Image (cartoon, rainbow, N blue to C red; front, side, top):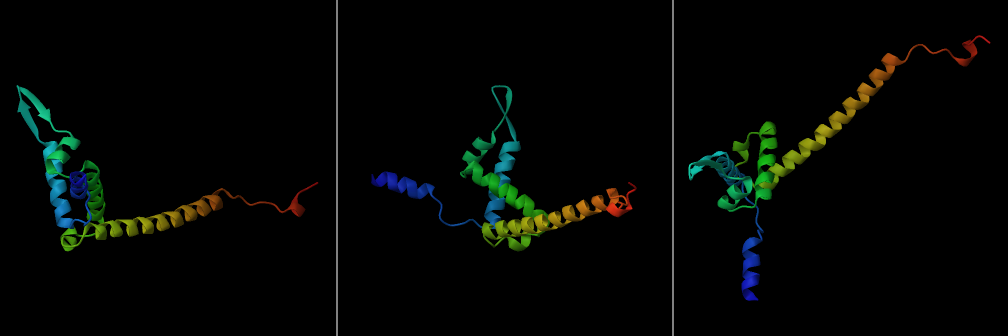
Length: 131
């Protein structure tokens, strides 16, 4: 029973990783995945799952880091955030997504009215029609 609790405690991660750690783990994971090796005369390539197993971090976590960092690269200079925790990057990405949704919504509304005005021909009032 005590061994099961100890195993669960080792697997469960409480603290958050720093950005520089996440960058290193993702780089190792992707480089392992992209490399090929020869076994019995055949050229083989690791799967993302196997590469994650070698790195020692779950694939889903690495994928999450990969996409968060990729989005954040376009928004900020990651060198300035290396000593921050990955949650800071998540917040930056989340806020930028909120702002872009607001802007997109406004653009869509403006485009709608622009198109409506273009297709809106001069309409006669009811009293202007000939009987």
